[in-house]
Length: 144
Image (cartoon, rainbow, N blue to C red):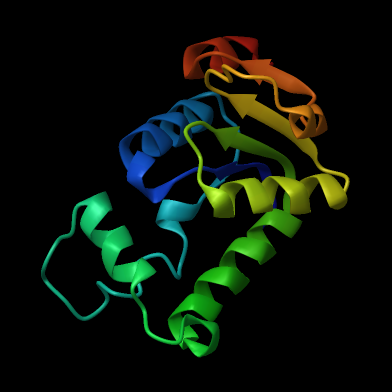
């Protein structure tokens, strides 16, 4: 599947990521949301238990020998394929290490890179981004 946008952010920012996803789709645009990705629910596939974003990330971050974990590899593959199939990356702040790595990969692939959120201090590498929006609504209002 091809996407117009790929959202990179933190799992702990789940509700805001889903809000952005919904608003982009309401404008008739396609978007990859990592929270909906095939690999993101690896831990929940055979469980009725629901985890908060913090609990989910605590469990994910404590996977033993994560470098050989099939679940981690699945998430990596799903996300990298979606990024490759996207026209632009949106870095939704606050964002963690993985989201920033994804932004660098997107830039290296020649993708348009966009930031949504307050960037309070100077960060020279943020010059990879061609568009800056303080809020989701500012971004959505500028979608054509």
